[in-house]
Every structure is written in C-alpha cells, then in structure tokens.
Length: 119
Image (tube, rainbow, N blue to C red; front, side):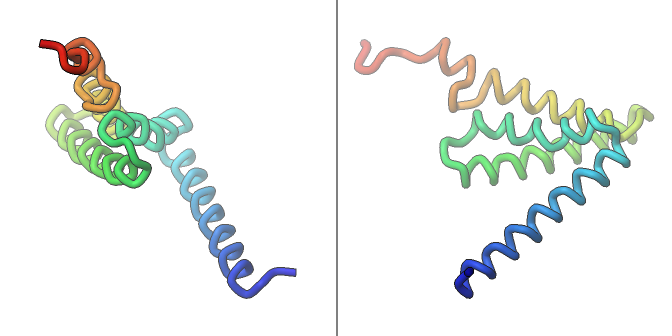
C-alpha cells in the first residue's frame, strides 16, 4: 500500500503532529488558553511583516519569540508581575512594532512609499 519512503514520511508527519498537540495541551494547562494561543500566534503574525518567503518568516518568528520571551521575563523580574502575561504583552508589542515599522506591508512603508520613478 505504501512505498518505503512514503511510509517513513507518513510516520514522521504523524510524530510531528502528535508532538505539536502535546505541546499545545501542556501549554494550555500551564498558561491558559489565551496566553498559549498568544504565544503561538503573535510571533508568527509579526514575522509576516519582516519577510516575504516562508523560510524567512520562520526565522523571523523564532527571533521575535526569543526576543519576546527575554523581554517579558526581564519585565516580569523587574516589575514583579506574572511572567506569562508579561511575555505575551512583549509579543504583542513586537507585533505592534512590526505592523507599523515592518518593511513588508508595514504602515509606515505604505505611507512613505513613493511611486516608481517619481521625482
């Protein structure tokens, strides 16, 4: 029914999906539904404004997530606030900055964009 390579790819896909589901369930239990969804979605949405290719978006999303985690934990430590909401707030601020200043469909780019060959 399956060739050797297709079966290997299918089992790898199933293992990947099971791992993602396990991470989501543990994130929902540890953080709550909205914070877990925020931590998964905000870096990916913000990365859309920094790259055009899927690979570039993946790298940008990882960088934004790492920056958000570091900034949120730092804010949590110094302001004595819970760490989960602080990290999500930092990710939200990264999304806001990306939406305004991002080179791919950012608001400033649209406002300051001059027509092609305009004096």
